Amino acid sequence: MKVPADHSQLEAKLANVLSSYASRSDTSAVQFALASPIHDWKWEWVPLMSLQQYFIASTTKLFVTAIVMQLCHEQELELDTAAGRYLEPSIMAGIHTLRGLDSSDRITVRQLLSHTSGIADYFEQRRADGRSQFQDALKEDFAWSFEDVLRITKQQLKPKFAPSSPGKAFYSDTNYQILGALIESVTGGTFEEAVQKRVIGPLGLTGTYPFTAQTLGRYTEVAPMLYGKVPVTIPKAMASVRADGGIVSTARDCLTFLQAFMNGAMFPVSYTHQLQLEWRRIFPPLEYGMGIMRFALPRYFSPLRPAPPMVGHSGASGAVLFYVPDLDLYISGTVNQIKKRSLSYNVLVRLVFACQDSWRRTRR
Image 1: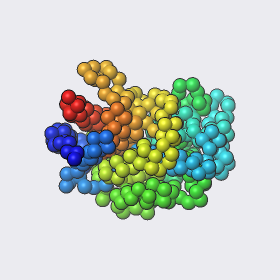
Image 2: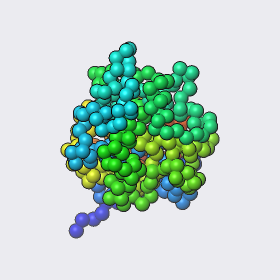
Image 3: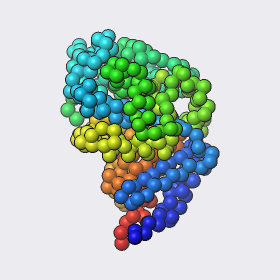
Image 4: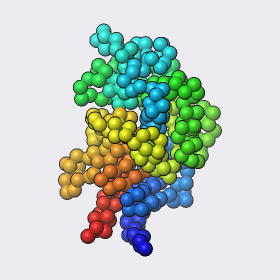
């Protein structure tokens, strides 16, 4: 008879770490869920005051990736086919003109997924006046449409490089807005319907839903995001980001989703390997594969011990969702902090080190 491992000391240490962050004035409704199948262990830290759902922001992109890979498996999409083949001609027309060369009609689905299209980022890239959509929304909440995304990208911003320039990637939310439109074109429904039918429903994610103009009234039910120490009220903006960052969820649901994503429950597991074949730097120490992010902390950030690479995604809301292959460890959670983007990664690393230390002692 197998005796269950005693994880009480580890869980006490994890709880201590998370309590210290939850007590800070620059975090909100901190919650985390962790699991390690190889250690037959799953644990949650969700204080009563943190039971609220939260915005997962760009972690939404993993949901998009899952749906795209499903459509590829169903032979409804091909990664190396021009995205324009699946879309209304006006969508891609003029989306990428650099130094007089228009590459719009040759941008592929793969390039959109991997941020190698070179397409400008409508959300955080600064326009000629020095402002960005993101900063404008923080100052005064407003809504925008997919047509606005295309207009800003085509008329007010410049592409960063030619599509698939060797070794280059540029993180652009426009890529995923286009992928959302592509999903709608192929499935014949809305992006939100595809998320419900293909991800939320099959996985039983009862605490997860896409935030839209129809759910604006639920904004106060979602955990508040902070910008520094100041609460942010941007319901119209959060209803506008859609495929690039509009899903509301919980730490538990996201953990379930990530495990399904990594183990082949939603699409063939061979695709999961393809997503990670080539990594390109976006903003150090983050790298991007195809529809998935890698957090690989350089040794000089942690000179006394290496941090194992982690794959998954994060969001500007302070949400993190990562798998640590070296430890067979899944981590999901949020600190709900927009301004201090390193904060969620600091928590992530401390949790990983705690698990690593505990399991090393167990093996002795």
